[in-house]
Length: 148
Image (cartoon, rainbow, N blue to C red; front, side):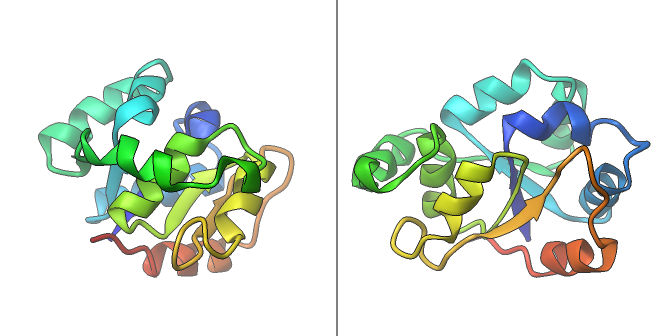
């Protein structure tokens, strides 16, 4: 069971006062894993999650993707068919088999849902700061997180 955390929501996720953030952090603490690599891992190091990333790495909760595979996966994605600037996140999802992406980026959400970019289509753990999502739905998304 692993998820991808997009850098655009990492600072919000670190805020334990937000129910969506607390739910993800509790899920990781209970055995869930985060997969990262390449450009995304570099982006995450520049966020408030940096200290947690170190802890997760030490405890086996953070998995680093093979850095040789990610450029191959990026090259396999049709750049004309995507709207977001997160090719590296799509490549990571494709390479790892992770099906859940925690993000606030609406264009990335659209790209993950498109068939053909990531097979099977990814699930979204939406993390908007301006509205509280149904936490039961979000728990269900996390329960079904998968990874190769």
